[in-house]
Amino acid sequence: MRKTIKTSAGFSLLCLYTVLLILLPSGSIGGINLKMIVFFPLLIVTVDRSLKETRSFKELAICLCILNVFIGWVFLSQAYPLFEFRMGLIQYKDIITTLAGCWFIRVLTSKYNEATAFIRMCLFTVAISGILKLLILLYAYSAGVPVAELIGGISRLFGVQLMTMDLSDFFGRVEFTSDTLVPICIFTVLCMRKRLQIGNAVSLAMIVLFILSSILTFSRFIWANALAGFILGMLVAKKDRMHVIYIGVTTAATIWYFYAIAAIVNVRFSERQTDSSDMERIRQNVALKSFFMDAPIFGHGLGSYSVQVIRSPQFPYSYESQMYALAGQVGIVGMLLLSSLIVNYYRKAFTFKVGARIYECALLLMLIFYLANGFVNPTLVSSVSSVSFGLIFVLAYLGKAGEDQAKLLLGWTVGA
Figure 1 (cartoon, rainbow, N blue to C red):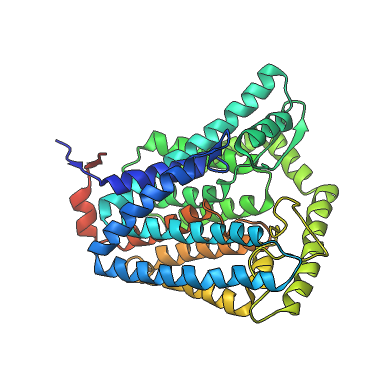
Figure 2 (cartoon, rainbow, N blue to C red; figure 1 turned 30 degrees about the vertical axis):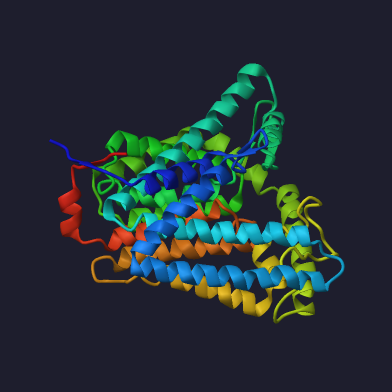
């Protein structure tokens, strides 16, 4: 008989919050910010749990100190007449929600059953987002509507600009803000399928959905990270017949759809496409380098931007080269603070103990690849990015969990 493990109300709120971040491009729909409606109750229950746990309470104190420090960069931008105070507050909110999301996950998944439930929930939710992409393509084909037009309507509904383009009459680019999770999910299924109690057929369906979803993003960087996640997952995981099936199905599908895949790759790596996107990044990097050198120590403050290049009139501080932009906004001091936060967040998760060392090295590479993406895409500071950081943290925690504990929980299901 299977035993059911009860989870807390706080953990249920965390799951709801994470689902909203993954499935809703902006966390809002029709002007109603569902994400923030859940955020504040989640904050309260996380603080309550932190007050009951000494270790978590120390982390809460650190988070409050950081909150006070970063508000200083909001006021710093007001030393320059060009920058709006409102923009500083918006970017400050982006940073705080990113840090808060990481903290929520750290505190509310500290138990083994919570960790496994959280990872399963992330995998299934990202798989659902892949199904939604396929439904969008199917609707575009059946209704005779261009994909870019459909994505444009979705963007207006959620109040965000999603990346899209038409590649043929009824086929096009479909990229969601949560697609940076796809490579991590591929790695997770390959390495953690048995511990997470995901069946063979379901895991195969997930791998197929994740690969299709990554292809539809039309992003070279997500493609590269997804390939890295697949290779690392295959190298690290304990091999069984399912891994042979994963390779077999992937190889067979690649051969069967070779010309379609080759056409997509050729279009994405065509001179016109690569020159357009790469030249824009180069132009931003040149301007942002000068922007950083003007105030290298403390930066220009949150909400600041380079007047030489403005990528988004609505949010002028936002650049594709987010890492360079942050350096110009918070300077060397701010970047060192952010780096120390990352190290502190993961230092107890990655222990590199014997038995999990290879797995943790592979997971560390996935984290590095994700951070490197910040040099070419604005993926590091947003509420959904906290899910990527938090998922890697929980995977590291679960990877080092004792085998006795894993065996004890084997066969149990997670209940609400």
